[in-house]
Length: 323
Image 1 (cartoon, helix red, strand yellow):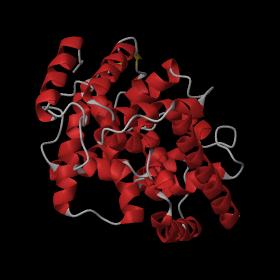
Image 2: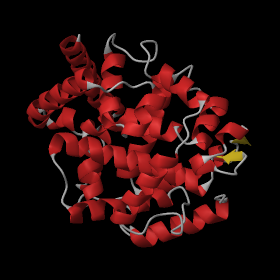
Image 3: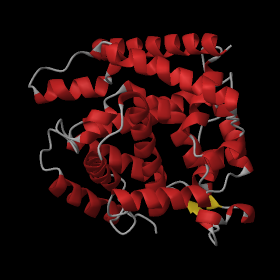
């Protein structure tokens, strides 16, 4: 099902009814979504989300033929997450503008699927389309599910009622892409069944394997050794059936290293200062809602630099520990 511009506008109108406080944005400070997504630790799930997306042939072939992932992997990563968090924590008007811009970019992305990829979740389909509702929802699902899994691994499992709220709130974000109700599972239990079905029916194509191999290479990730850590953490978070197709070993040695990594993170993460632990987009949102003036661009750069230093430092420490 193709999401046209009229479909997107109807979806945005529905979002405005569901999130009437335009200044708070599509979520707001009392939501479970803000509690989860504000945490820097959700970046642990970034590799898992990327690989699950690539295991959908629509996504793999669109990225392979229309993206700069192989020439600018870190830049693409930064741009993707900057957009996601700006839409999650910004004012609703900002999220709507971003939604229209992304939709317009997606309208230019389409192509042919090879016959070998037209199976599983893409059975019988021969064309991919970046504004396909089902493919859009899969990308959305990987982001919110992977963020939640990373959060719970380090900060503890949410109650069932909180998970239900988190999923319901996440559907507001899906409206920014024009995804209709008919495509979205109605509740958390149905969402879990959807994830299980998709994971069993994904197709890891040679294009997906090649892109993933580059994303987790020393050429794409810095500092030296971070690629090994990223592969380990991603392997630990990935569904078991998809580890081997992506070349992610997870035997007894890797499992012990993964568990040691989690113990380190659980022991240290909560003690981090808020300026490092919480995302700059969340801090900006709190200032906006408190009526305090926005900081200048240099202050935001400082916040991002602190998080970059943390990521590099953790990467070095874990790489040394796993050597």
